[in-house]
Length: 386
Length: 212
Image (cartoon, rainbow over the protein chains, first blue to last red):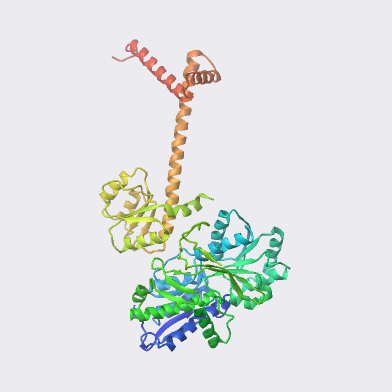
């Protein structure tokens, strides 16, 4: 399909990140990352002399609206490319739309794996790139009695299944698994906090997402707990949420992600400074923001390389494409459209900054169909550098 | 770990064979099998010699039976899990799916999503059928054995005018002394009895109420 726009002077792209609703904090961060990259591309003369023109819609954290808006963007021929989605439930709504019209969805979010579509370019970590390293780290440092708490939807359930497998292989146990509503308020966590106090696990693995994250960490802090001894570990809790909950609340807790604002190097420094110049702050820079950012650049490079904006031409050059991202050099695996990503484990310090504790020495190949990650699988765990 | 988890966990170790002409569908299927992490290869036409053992076979299913595929399947010592690749949902194709006893089906055009599900459901059905076959075999031999024991005991009871328990003890004693299974003893008793009675019947000549 060709871009059915009368305007030949721009590359229109749909942007579907919620600016309202439960996942607004993180999706606003992704939106910013995408917009910063669009600015950079356009300031550099666009692609083949044409700027990228974002069509920004707000699905309000409602999966059904993601589908409706994707229909409007792609079905009505405004564009063939969408950057968007955070929760798996929203991606699953957009997926049939991009497949039906042969569009492209750039999905800059970690997720549970077990998906491949020729119409999606995945920019976030699969479980073999984040769950496995996190579990190893936690068992090395805190012990093997895990308490799981998560929001009740597919990502936490699947993520916990993976984690449970790894913990068991390491000889550990999951002492309890507790799910809360996606829109859980502060009072909804009192039961979880009581259970944690009663069961005394070594570590808490949280897959609570959205506004629930801040509520959970606050409730945990309010219960006179010691994060230095029994931290909450997460794959999603990020800089923006730490800023929202406050450094005092977040101190000592742990997150695994391909990118943290504290990643060393000039490339990341430049990225942060440009972000500051555009948005006036850097608190909202997260790994999902960085993924949205590098995915826009991948798209722009693909336009330049393909010399065309249609999906088939773009896909042909996106498979195997590499980019010097703020996290390091990333690459789209032509086997599965997911990305080779770095893997890092960081802990929040007293000023609310993530301090990297461990990082992979090289990008990890994505393995979205890995059902049972093996703790000692050398093929998936590169050497660690402290 | 439950059996169902084991099915998913073991998928990666399976060797998969695609018996389908090398076209876009076969290509798409091979790529997805590769993503899933199976050892997969596509061969067309179906090999005439024995291939290495195949755990799961994806086979072309059309409106008419494919002799080479049927012959290939007949040569497998252990029947692989069969997944039909069907282009039409017409009754002749459906019939063929039934005749080939496929465990699961993928309709063409092949899309990446759905392959894993078809494999898992196919494996479950295949596994369950094999477990049931094994169990049926066990039960059948158990029933046959029990019938044999009863027959042998009856023979001993009639011949020697003893109780069932005594007949059983006698067989058990014999089994221990001759180091055979009690079932073999029962078999021997039945056979000797049949032999004896047929010899006796013949020696007596045609019976009186024989119409000739």
